Amino acid sequence: MTALLEISGLSKAYPGVVANDDVSFAIQPGEVHALLGENGAGKSTLVKMIYGLVKPDHGTMRLKGAPYAPAEPRAARAAGVAMVFQHFSLFDALSVAENIALGMEAPPKPRDLAARIRDVSQAYGLPLDPFRLVGDLSAGERQRVEIIRCLLQDPKLLIMDEPTSVLTPQEVEILFHTLRKLAAEGTAILYISHKLEEIRTLCDAATILRLGRKVGACTPRDVTAAHMAELMVGKSLAQPARDTHAPGAVLLAVTGLNLRATTPFGTSLQDISFSVRAGEILGIGGVAGNGQDELLAALSGEISAVPDAITLNGAPIGALGPNARREKGVLCAPEERLGHAAAPEMTLTENAVLTGRIRRGLDRGGFVDWTRARGFAQDIITHFDVRTPGTEVAARALSGGNLQKFVIGREILQDPTVLVVNQPTWGVDASAAAAIRQALLDLAQGGAAVIVISQDLDELLEISDRFCALNTGRLSVARDARGLSMEEIGLMLGGAHDMAEVVA
Image (cartoon, rainbow, N blue to C red; front, top):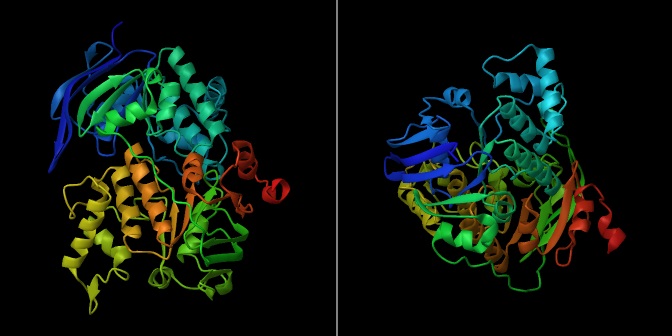
């Protein structure tokens, strides 16, 4: 069979780093092909070359047997290559149909486009109402918009970057059903994910990259997830180790927290109450868009609350701003890496100063001590294995996973009393995810209180002492994470807020 896409010797270098070095592999028609590798292994650069966002320095590509060298994404789409990015490119205030039309070269009339959206979405098991506002959609429904926008182009190759990172288990099953249907019809799928069990379930073949080079290939269903992880990192992975210890006194307590959403498409918090003790990790699960961002903003001080609604060691802090809370030891790492946790155009040193100035003493007499600041940035890079040429690289130049390691490391190395993290291992490879989880466990072991907000249920059950679920801005009663069944968790995620009292 003639390969749909054949890549031969692709190479791409940037100042100080070789992103891809002589990479070659082929994708067959109707094949679901995984592209695996650590953060910084070169996956993003490779798919950007396939999609026309980046021009290779060396090497060639052939699509359906003909030379293929797209100068821009428009040329790639015209050739039959479509891509669903990890970060959605949608406008909340526009409808589904309007967002899809923006991504088309020559969109049909609105009535005809709406009919096509309905027909295609129903045919592939991803039903969408073309007239709903995107801001009212769940994360899973937003991904459907991106996928349908691609399918309307009748692609021969569909590239998907971390497609399940914001989906519930039920939505993952729906997505996999759709991808299998596409593959059966002859569409090839290039699938990037750090969730190796998903790769084993879905993919027919896998290409593994390490430090920009192809280091192996395999049939995922014939090998273990551990074997693929070892190919990616070149060594055996250590699993996070938990020490059993009794938690200490309550450090952070939230009582009757009510906050109105600050944006038209936000989620209001309703009567949120919980506490977390020294040496304890509290896991908060939930589908995206159920108040996670608002809760983190309330805990960080970005949104003010009634003073007594949030207390630290019994003292009210609800009315304090972010800097005052940081000074007292309450540190936070938000979900959105670029633009919220880090300033894209600033260097890593400058980003280290943004949150580390107070607790790491990075200024003197009102002026930044750049020597100390660079030292702090280098400590983060060293301790958390951030793959970067140096401290003066802009944050936007890092891969998503490496920037995530930098953001989490920046907060942990400030020795917090309370650390709140939202999606700590989102888009991070298996090795880095294990390291981040171990760092959170070590932080709790050292006496800190840790709150982990995540959509990754396996992650929460692996590291949490207690678990609760956030649904439409309301929080379930916390339960001991050990022994919780997926059925019980599903009920909690679905809004059974008194689940703990019913089944305890």
